Length: 124
Image (tube, rainbow, N blue to C red):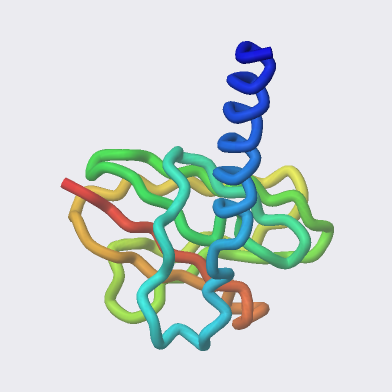
């Protein structure tokens, strides 16, 4: 019986962690607040007229690749003077990569669909 309680408690703790993670901010505040902690990794999917993940955290020197999966054209364009070069317009099957070298927050968007936005947090 004690072993069953132990497994049940571990399951409940795991379920709580997944639920809390899924309830994070979607960044839909018009860009006035800092983004929530981003996903770690080096891949962004462009699908469903959105960047997934919307917020990404990488170390300086990391090459990030955007993979385009929509039939509509999209791109990656820096917002402001961000360390990022604009990608060509791409659709399903296209990829674009950029290596981030400077720590800081890099905001970007699709210049074709301005509501599509993303952030790369570059750490030292």
